[in-house]
Length: 150
DNA sequence: GCCAACGTTGGC
DNA sequence: GCCAACGTTGGC
Image (cartoon, rainbow, N blue to C red; front, side, top):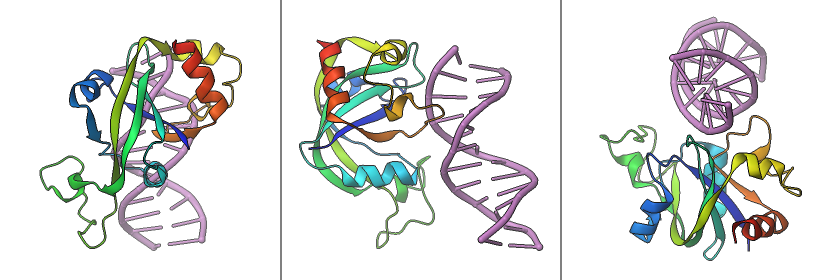
């Protein structure tokens, strides 16, 4: 079991949207390192949802991988902002797993709180300059966060 | 809206 | 393969 954190801008797609949809393809990621992580996700892995570009930013809930990654349809859609002219059906470039809503935290764990929490110092999320929108965290870090949320 | 910290692109 | 220019992310 691997534990993950994914970022999303709530103006674009929030935890409430995921709750409403039940599940959704985690598409539109256009960064190779993030894509590689998306491709590593296994069914049943747990995924923390983080609201970026929010006020305040923070972790807002929990999802689960429902389906391993398959080609992101947006890369073939000429009208999409995420269209990639270099991607072909035979050789897709971008992939998205499907995520399933599990729960929204009663109150979000904002970035300040996370920064002040012992044991989370090494989280990728909190590393200076880290912009990676999909990454792993340790079971220890995950457990601390779930404890904080309950 | 600013800007630091990256990541990507493309000329050479 | 280098690196300058440009684009993006995301906190503030």
